[in-house]
Image (tube, rainbow, N blue to C red):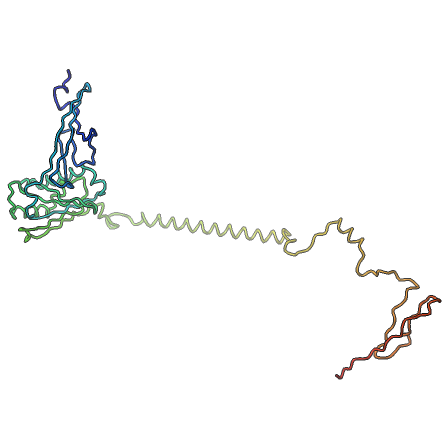
Length: 328
């Protein structure tokens, strides 16, 4: 036999619901260190009953289970007229905080410790809503004596800022106190914790402005250098392109001069030129007739006769050509 088989402190305990161990999203949990069951049913409307199973395992792996029932009942002051209300705003992500019972219990423990010196009141969570996280709660004296003098002490604790120190490591944005009901004559209080030295630090508090100005200036200079290099490269490329054109590269494209190969030159030489006559002149080639000029017939303007003796037919007489009347 081992010691853990005699002492519950050395056994492994777990709280189950439908044979599944509870996780952090549940409103209730089993603390394996203190061997206690804790819960915060802030979003559960009483009365309500839950069934759970407490499982115990020893060093040999043997288990024992016991069914337990948790009942949520309304406290006696739930339906009484409230005397005040407090709102605690902490810098936390709401979706994570609302689903983490450990975070919620840590804040509740901090608030209970902060007001423990004022009659050890009972803390009641009314609501937890986003923006970052706003926890609305009230305090109730254990003797059920809703005395405004005690409520005023709650207000003084808020105003002093002593509550904030009990909520570490959470970052508190503000804590407000609003009197209600029979204590509405009290002054409301909104306490905003001062910023830390790191949050208040400015240029005058030791932050050298050169640490910002110098890097920005270096970046600007580098950008200007890059722009100048790009412009120089473009200009150099354009200049080299113009020089290549002047040296003859691509000249045939710009001037439009046709290129004639040597084989084509031979064909051109063999073809008849337009300036050469189609008939070769001989001694017997007839000459063209002479036509009169200005209505007169020159001695050379004689009808053409064939050089052959048998050709008695000559050209017909030339019809008279009238001069155009310049006076019309």
